[in-house]
Length: 160
Image (cartoon, rainbow, N blue to C red; front, side, top):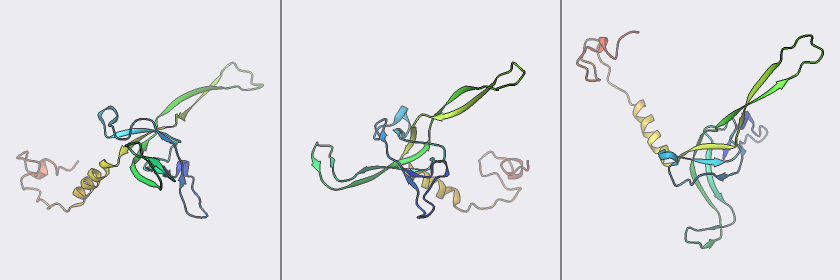
């Protein structure tokens, strides 16, 4: 995974941080029916959007159990979130003449990350391109383009 966890990067060489881990669920299968899988890596805040690669450097075993030499790098997907859990603790005040305790809580990443399958990137690209296409402007009194049979100004073009 390549990214900028917690805003860290190599400022001198202008390079991101590269982290490694393993897949926690099979990347070729849809986790819970969604086009995603889990990785077991350091997925901290700031890592979202990081590309996740399969990187076999120096050799790997093929799907037919053949040992192959060389390198293989393959884009598996893009990290979009790392689940976290809440922790609580106590802060003790020393030499304070009260009996109140302050409780502190925080979030701790559990080193798992949700990754969107790379196949979904082309669908995202199509959606973005579609939204960037110029749409014909309607006059306020023309029929609304949503098919409601109302005037545009009384439907999707209503001023809120």
